[in-house]
Image 1 (cartoon, rainbow, N blue to C red):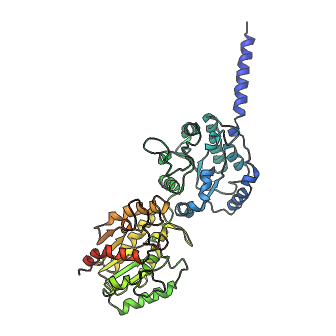
Image 2: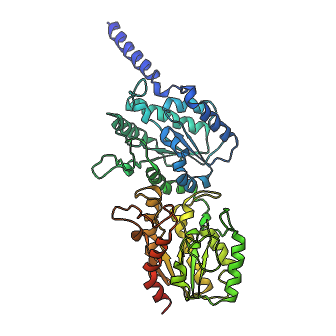
Length: 469
C-alpha cells in the first residue's frame, strides 16, 4: 500500500525548505533608507554616467571610507591613476548591493576589475533588524557575483574575504564562515578570491586596534595595508599604471615664489660660479638659504655658517616632486658643472595629492633612483648624499610616518652603491617615543632654524669626506 502519510511529510519538508530558501533576505534586493543614501546614490550615478571607469569597489562602509579625505592620499596613489570609483555605501548589506545593481549603479560602464567585499553588516543583528546565517550571507554574495558577471561581461571580479571584526559577539566568525563558503567561487578566469584578513591581526590572532580602532573599520594605516596587500593581484588583473614619479614635468603647484624665475636664476648661477656642493630638493631644502637667493628662509644663518665658504648652491624648489627635479636637472641646472657632492632630499611631496596624484612608495623609489642616475649622467664622479625622507607629523604610527619609515628602509639599501651614501636624519628630530621634538620644525614638516642646525651638524662629517676636505 502506498504511504500517503509519508508522502505528505516529504512534501511538507520540501515546501518548508523551498520557502525558507526563497525567503533568504540576503538575496532579496532591497533599497536602504532613502535619507541615508540619497545624496551619495545620486552622486555615484552621476559619476558612473560620465564613464572612464576602469576599477570599482563594491561594498559597505569599509569601501565607502575610500572617499574620506583621510584616505585620499592612498587612494590617489593606488587607484586614481586606474580611474577608480568607490561604490561602497555605509550600512549596505548584500540585499542592498543587489538592489543597487538592479537600479543602474553599473549601467553603461565596463570596468576592468570590480573589487567586491560585502557581508559584514549581514552578520549584525544589533544595528540591523536581523542577522543572517553564514550560509545565507554566502548565498547573497554569490548572487552579487553572478549579477556582476551578467551585467559586466568583460569585467574580472576580485572577491575579498570579509575583513575581520570583533565589536559584536559572533560577527567575526560568521563573516569568516561565509567567506570560506564563497572562496569556492574562485575560478581563475572571471572570479578571483583574495584573503588579506591576516593583515589586521596580531600574532595571537586578535584584531590589531592600531589598524582597526573600532575592531571593524580600518584606519588610514589600515587602508594603506589593504592597498599594498591587494596591489600584486590588481597588477596581474589590470596591469600597472604609468609611474608619474619618473616622468619629467614642469611645476605643478603655485607656491611662495616664481618657479620658472628660480629655474632661470639657477641656470645662470652655474654658468658664473664654481660649484662643489649642491643641495637638491623641495621646500625643505629651498628654505635653507644660499644661492639662488630665496624670498623665504627658515634657517637663519645656518647656511652661511656651514656652507658659505664651500662653493655651495641650493637647488631646492618649494612643492617639487621627483618629476620636477628630473625636469630641472635635465634642463640646465647642472649644465657645465661637476660638483664633488650632491645632498639629495626629495619625495615628501610625492606622498601627497594636490594638483597631481600622489605616488606609491615603489613609484617614489624609482623616481629617486632616476634622479641619482641623472646626476651621474651629468657628472659620473659626483658623490651623492641621499637623505632619508624627514618624518612628517608630530606623532608616530600615522599614515605618513609609516610610509616614510618603509620608504627609508628601501632607500637605505642604496647605501654604498654607485657613489651613494645614505643618511637618515629622522632619529635626531624625534624623542625616544617617536614624537617630534619641540622647536625643530615649524609645522611638523618644514624645519625651523634649530632643525636646520641639527641637519647641518649631523651630515658635516659625511660632507667633509665627500668633498675630500
